[in-house]
Length: 459
Image (cartoon, rainbow, N blue to C red; front, side, top):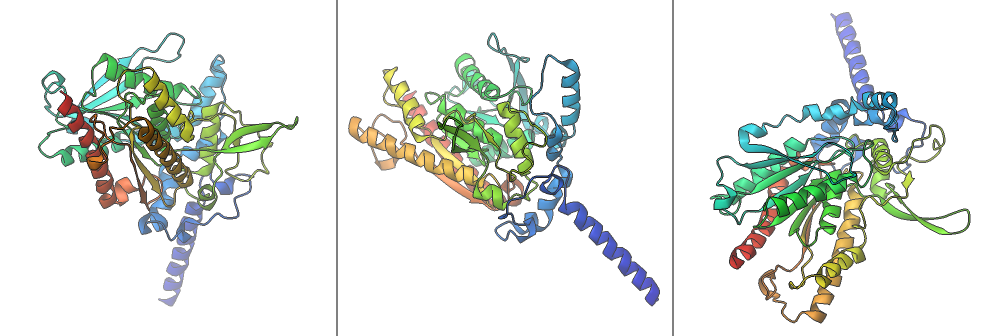
């Protein structure tokens, strides 16, 4: 009896040890490469700020369920004229991109679904741009409900993978429809999912160009968004939402930025003693959460390389601390500079006879346990500075500001921003913080409703 118990205990101990070891490391993770791990890195189970389920369970299972880190051994720059090289690269990335196979949201059972294919401008590579349109089932035709909003959504996936775009779209649009209750605003609303081109096949700014192409086509060619235009994105899609909004300020009313991928500017000195600005993922949150599986820091760096066309040279960077790779491309297109928002706004004002257009209202989400958290917090400060500068301009040049009720005398809403902090790691709040998700969606819905009411009064 005692012997059997001892054998059982030994087998159990070995099994637990194997499980712990297998979950403690993952293919493409920080333990598997030659580069130093940041000294500030904390094991997932020690990050007390995380939701308990993510901290002790899901935080480790991400490395088993998702295989994006396996892409870090793939080339980040590919000669697309070399068919053999192309096939080898795509085969290498196949496992990492299999995350799309897990995206099994039943969109067709919940919404009316229709695909639109948009021809690219001359000189742009790739097939016609696919945009999937979701609408409330049996919703009225736009012609019978012209004052309906448009929501343009950009999925995440480090610009290299199509990650959970259906699941997130389902959760967001379904929640907005529930909040609308009797269908006053959302009855004929359109939720558009942009299938932008991925890197490394298509480097920056291909994805941004696709998002802008989709936005302009839906608004100007199809006549959508007369009840408000709202741009949204998660992770890499959050970055795209920022740049798309910046470059379409005359169209966008609100933008929802969820845990964006935002490199930080850093100044280096060249060999001829000149100052050069480069961009890096390095930040306190990247260093603290270097062990995370969602998203792996090694994959974030590889994706940055792939998106900006930087080749990975084996062995040359083995001594660089994980997370410190730099690029000379600003993948935000200037969205991390407050003055750029004001300049774009002023450019629009100088070319139109309309009243000065307010900066869009911002809903920003960051997450504890997310390596990308500090980038989101930095954007919060950038946009707050842009709003302060806008307010100064309005007070100097526009005596018709109606500070009460958040509107100006011309009916346009006054710009503002709202920030929400979650605690389930990267994009975890959709599943593990239902109350937070509902609160965030309610805030965004209220901003949409303000815009919709303003448009309705003008019709």
